[in-house]
Picture 1 (cartoon, helix red, strand yellow):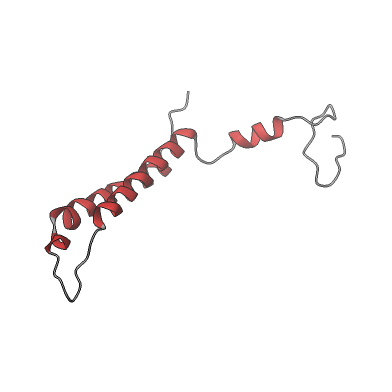
Picture 2 (cartoon, one colour):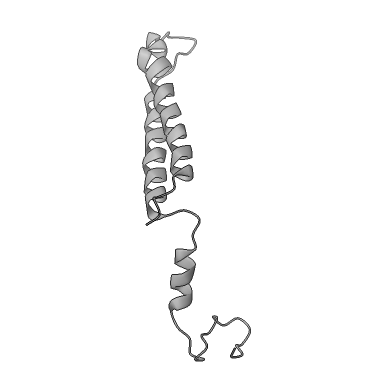
Length: 98
């Protein structure tokens, strides 16, 4: 095996530096492309759920009955829950081996 300087990229048997080291590291990621796409979509779903929960609040001078709407109390938490479950599914998903 050829000697390499400290701080340099790993070399091949031929002694030349190749861009293969970055490609090999890319293949060794714990999650695949599909997993990252699923995670991104899931995070967007969670953000949508939190946006659905937000809105104007009540204060001491004016009561806002909108804080108890069905969207804020029922629908938005379910949307967030679905997003969090899909994040777990995105992490656990394993593509079929060929």
